[in-house]
Length: 184
Image 1 (cartoon, one colour):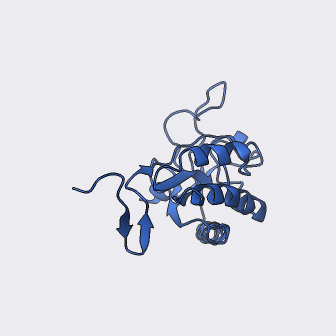
Image 2 (image 1 turned 45 degrees about the vertical axis):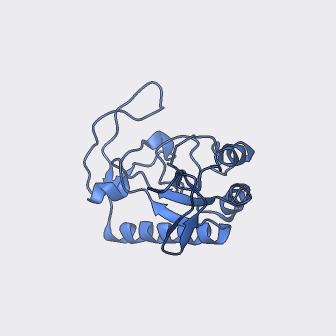
Image 3 (image 1 turned 135 degrees about the vertical axis):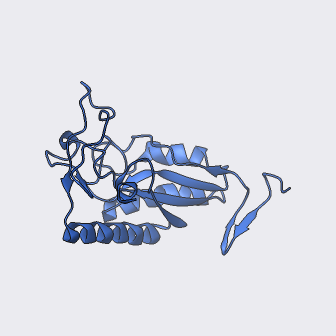
């Protein structure tokens, strides 16, 4: 059995050790959803891991379900992510962005009054995280075929920004009841 501190190669991807940091949502980017110096410090402190998966990163202003999570749909956000990428790369580690659309797991208060979208107009069970007072999820609006195509284009755009910013890879968040999972 290989030791944790030995390099690992998967295809063309090599990491310095076998330690991988899972995505951990920190909600530190502020309302602008632009990564900041606190986030640079956070990821830099964890760059002993050979591979870091970023916290879930929204692909557009209407794809959010939590306050202050970072985004990657603008040049400003990509440039701010680049500071994090450079800090992680300076320690010999790799970093992969996790792209995210929450779908129906949101609330109009987080979407400037818009109704969340989903494959079907089915209200999720439970309450919206972090909004106080607590309130139930609303019934989402069903997406049209054209809107689904627009969301695919948003993912593509964010992936292109990720590549330009210097990320080592892209992961699509397709679990936990978020948009991609809602189609499955």
